[in-house]
Length: 174
Length: 235
Image (cartoon, rainbow over all chains, first blue to last red; front, side, top):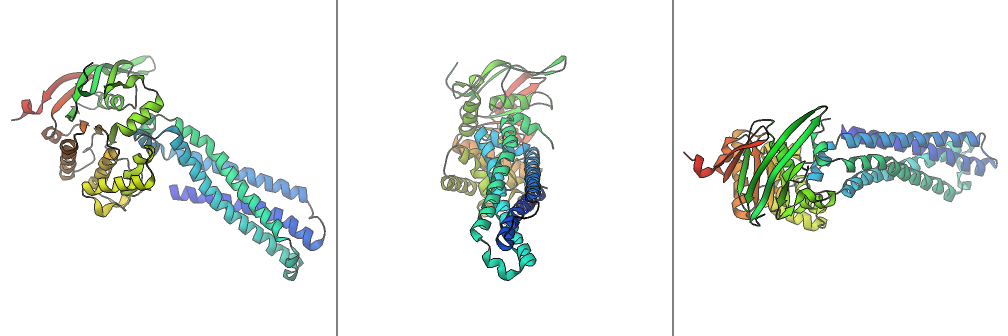
């Protein structure tokens, strides 16, 4: 179950970041190839913002699930001498790994999708006119958003897990 | 307070409140455990073994009474100090082994060393030596699901001893094992007690544990009913 849950979180990060980066890359590609602002630019940005919020909620939900399925492990670790900050660190590291890998894959695939769609719309021979630095910047923003979201989404569950007493964590039956 | 005991419990009481009623899980229990002694706490389910155990290990605090571990009154320690105690002074062995399923035997054994501040290399070296000493050299890279119940409990024993604690608390260590592997675990605990001089306290139903115990404390309804030495019950 744990692998499936991690995989679904990972997938939601990839998809929402890819969507976010795709929309922002499309704006740059349209501007470079058509010489005009993309139609409905504000609308697109609103949609990408919603996708980011959904991503944040999915990560928080997933991390809460992760804490509840590991109550016994948390209790065991506390019995073995883990301090609260050790427990917090475990969940923040997990969130960081999910955010870093999911954000990188999502950022790269989103910018690639933006370029391909631009190529289909305006011709692939014109793609050399697209400023790649700008596209890379969008991908980097996607990675940064994924890392921020996954860390923010992990803070509450990590804090909740750290505050558990060893005995109540060990008594918990999922 | 005498200074020759690893554990000293004085008039320990633990009361749980359930709505209007109060349940006296441990009711004025006093006993001493000498350094290097092997003690078994026996009693039926609900007799207060686990509550007493949790208090000795610093997992829970009594409502009344004092518990000294190596001369320190642990009922007065804060959460940080109790975590320090659990990390360095006390080793835990659970009935259900409680190994982390995603970690190998080596990583599970090395886990407490990370909490004690050792580097990963130092921790793994120590864990490897510990696993080799209990005959699990060939199983160190196996995950818990790839190990038998007896092997899992031996990994848990290695994990309990890796930070060189002076006391090992084992809560029903043979409860989930068959007769033969249960006997192996009892022998291993007995060997560790004799060779390393570790004080061992077990909560158990297993009568085989009497063979290796120096003393047996019988709990009933939260009170210490009687105390026997191995010599006194030898037939």
